[in-house]
Length: 327
Image (tube, rainbow, N blue to C red; front, side, top):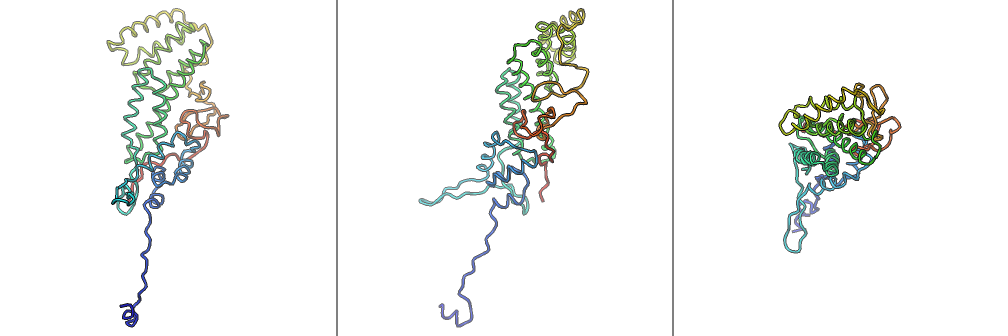
């Protein structure tokens, strides 16, 4: 047979087909999402993307999620006896674009956020803080499915920042015996952007601290007024607190003095320095975390953010990649 083929001028050589592109290589080529690079096993590439996008410098909190993205991008199919299992890539391909499925979803983080809220409301602050930190470490590895979801993730970052700052203020209060400092920290806590039910608790704490402990009656007046303006204070379950706030307001207005000097001026807008936990009043220079947007004094530039624990403060970046329409 071979001789006949040669006599007829044909070729008996076998040409190997051209090798295709592996799914993992396609993931890296087709996407700028760090989650897709992590799913491809290109951990260094994923980390470089996050460094460029949000100046990420500490990936320890994201390690579990990075490995999860890789492990969740494929399934193992058992083969015949004595043969290895087959690794089947799980993909979310659109048209000719090959991309992996990613395990972290915005809806999962929303459920985790609800749990963090519950822990906060039950004064389980350590558990609450851990949940908010976990959410912050997860968001960079979520691929948004729509512009609305991109906006929701950005809002979630803001929520986590505010609550982590609030818990850190509470931890600082518990760590000091200085009544004036406790009052200041309680006052700053009331300026975190919390849900109304949580803000009510913060104002109650600050009001009682200023009135009973530091005898700062001007501050107590302010906290009582803000407390009485909250919608939730009119509910029946808060009747006792409403009565207490009205009594404190009346007494504080009669005294109208602070017995201690507080580093707190509610009339002058401020951000909280997330390093020293003091006010950064309007007009002063601040350094900002490129990921969670926490504010710091300029001497914090180049150091790791105390809130998210991920990014380097003061670095200007493009931010996380938002929703991209795949063709």
